[in-house]
Length: 235
Image (cartoon, rainbow, N blue to C red; front, side, top):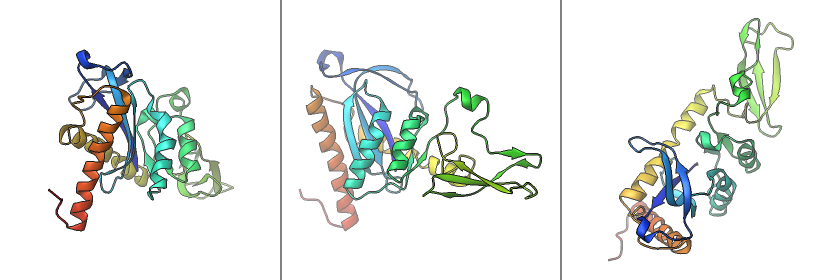
């Protein structure tokens, strides 16, 4: 499962009083900076590139506040996320806890915090080198690390999972593979905005914007369902 947010803008002449100012990061050829309008927060399936849960709010709303609601909404619809890939903007201890509480492994790159700068996120080391990941116990919430040569005593140790040491270590191939899948949410936002007319808003007010987003995404899902069933859409 991948979660992220997309921006919806409208001309200043028709801007609604329910919109707000927000900030967006630079993506590809688009510059980052402030914008006035709304955001779509969505959880997207990494295998199908389809949204399974979404929320619309004003641009000033912070993305991290929607992780738990989106995961809960996805689960209520029958989509339990085994992993949740998010960008650096979600690198908060609270977000890791919300994912783990829902039995979903967080896949999030680290921000350059003081702990990260001094290397607190690195695996244990000894005179024989850097220790190797040897598995995780999800029930206990710990990861196991072993001495590379096995000469240390004890030969292994358990580390409690947290923001710096998640149950899926960032050094592992699995983590890197899962994080590459986060591109699915960016692809889907691009399709919704450019192919399904989510971007050019012609309505005012948060409720109408939400309705516009709901109808757009539901139309996309209806087309995907029709293709999966091999049945033509009604005229």
